[in-house]
Amino acid sequence: VAGAAPSASPERAILHVDMDAFFASVEALEHPELRNKPLIVGGDGARGVVASCSYEARFYGVRSAMPSSKAKRLCPHAVFVSGSYGLYETYSKRMHDIFKDFTPLIEGISLDEAFLDVTGAQRLFGSGEQIGQRIRERVRDELGLTVSVGVATTKHVAKLASEAAKPKASRQGPIPGPGVFVVTEADAVPFLHGLPVRALWGVGPAAAQRLESIGVQTVRQLANMAPSVIASVLGKASAQHLHDLAWNRDDRDVVVERAAKSIGHEQTYPRDLYDRAALHDQLVRLIDAVTVRMRADQVVGRTVQLKVRFATFRTITRSRSLPKPTANSSAILKIADDLLNAIDIAEGVRLLGVSMSNLEDAAFTEQLQFLDGRPVSTDLDDAIDLIRQRFGDGSVVPAPLVGSTSPGRFQRGERQWGPNAP
DNA sequence: TCTGGGGTCCTATTCCTA
DNA sequence: TCTGTAGGAATAGGACCC
Image (cartoon, rainbow, N blue to C red):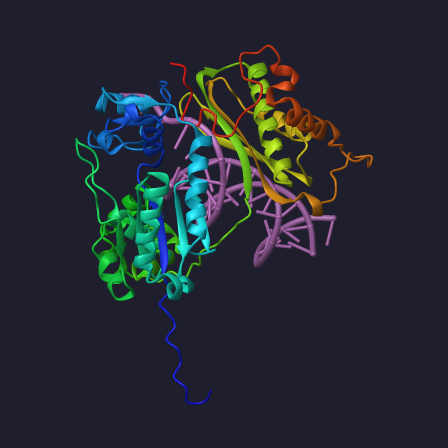
């Protein structure tokens, strides 16, 4: 209507919801005897790392991704739990079910964190802050867990805001934080400029050190630096990106579902491997696990990547692309074997990994063919999938693994935090 | 004092082809 | 037929995230 006042559209509201000490909190919930103790979820073995830890453990300096051996030194009386991926998945799903009551625009970042676009939900449920409070209450009441919520007009400030909402560690456990932390559009730049560059999403140890070399330690200094100067140490793309973030220029949307770009598995062994036959058997195992997932997701892949970490921790990758994409175990194994055979393994192999990329929808893909034109059959893989469905994962295993000490089937999330053996 | 496993994205180099 | 070159794809490595 001419002359009518435009209805005030609500300000963009992005929530970042982050579970507090997720894995450790779930374990404490399921095992009451572990409550209020320094608790570490992760790999117990010599090559394990910390996946998550309670606030009581954090007080001693224990952090996620830290080698377990170091964590034990810092906090010798901590209880170690190896963790159960499936359990965390269940809790994560229940959390998402709560989110769905407020908005369909949910972008899961990991099991324990997600972005929610609640711009359009504000008329119905109140401001972003109010929605954040309600989500917190419901997760607490229905799941028995605490989450921290950041509210802002952009994704990356929402992410930083949830960090500001989090509890602090003490000997007695978490000291509650604000729980919900709001950064308005007007406050965003001052909020950002008070932070160290390391706080920005995408600035890790390497970038922080490079920025330091041109005298940049804070987001404010980064913001006031010419992008061309930043580019001299970080490259053009990330320089422009970080400079934009420093001024709260972030127009990235909450993306509900994105297709995976690669599927892979890797494993660190309790002892380094020096034997080609043993490595071949491990390839069989890894590829079996990868292709099972590919077929379950109905995708095929064109590029095979092999990853080898040597005893010295030197890591290399070798890849080769097929003329046509596939999810066929033997076709992939052939390539992976070729790649492996071209590598000198005298140093000893600590980790082996296989991943498939250049993924395509299996339904729209022409079948991989042999040179004479016959299609490479996936009948065998399909039959194996069926038998496992009916009789269990252990009912059929690749021949090289029969009678070996390795478990036949490689499970997603299995020994995710390192080998358990000493 | 030793560094997991799942990924994504970016950059530099190499190789191929027009 | 040889040479130079521009651009794209493939490859390798590394940084970063949870």
